[in-house]
Length: 269
Length: 105
Image (cartoon, rainbow over the protein chains, first blue to last red):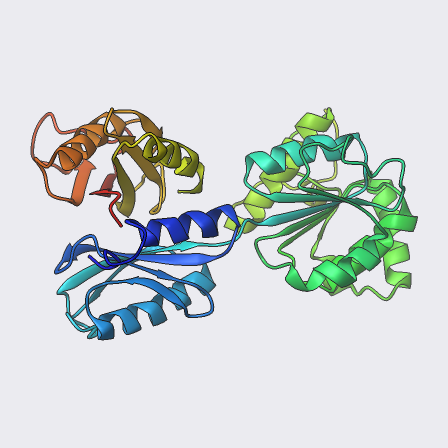
């Protein structure tokens, strides 16, 4: 085992503990079969490593593979020769990717926001609530949020948009074209994986006209899930939160679940 | 892993040794993906899970054996594909491979 000469008895675990608590991405490679079973190598996105699998060449090859797995958010088992040779099976290495928490940005500090924020926390999201109105955008109203930001959606997205990716979500609950048009336009400029907007079918029809006026194309509009959520007849803010989160899951997995966007009945049961 | 850090750190602060079990492979349908983790303190306290509750009891036995030195660290397989008639299985019919080791790294 590596690291025994270190001041800590468990240097790899300690570094993992700190990284996970700070929500820093990191990959942990463990020998689970063959020579050196139990050995560990922790790999950071910078390429820095802690620990060793017992052979410098094996460490180098596994660190390279672990970085690839981490970038893709994948976890799995690979086989190597004693010195990291491909197509050999002397050493079995389990590489686990710890990716940062997905981020959900909710625009609009309304009742539905509090319920959606709670449901999103249950699913492991880091939750930001953003509203331009100071009296509503307070941490007291949204204790479940990791962050409550008082700002205009477009300005907030200029700042944070570049960090949004396929695992993240933007939910526009403002119910007000003054806010939701800039929020949707701003979110369309990001790589966010899920973009949903609340409002009745009539509201969304009017919103589409405003979005077109703002230069949004029909192709871009296909990214917008509106009315937001699955067609499960949700009524309360809590039920609506479940329908939104279920739609996010279905979008990610590509499973056929009836989105309100693709149906034509009343939104509520 | 993240959800069991508090328990692990508390046990270690108490001076207890800890074993960690992680799902490292899955054949067929399984309730938890690779990476699902549970920890067992030497007093037999448990945090986290590796299945839907089907094999946790057996994992605790393995973990305590590893901590007690009667078993080497290694991969333990659970599933109906086992030959033993009374082997611990998963209700969903899949097979999971769990790596059990002392937290000494």
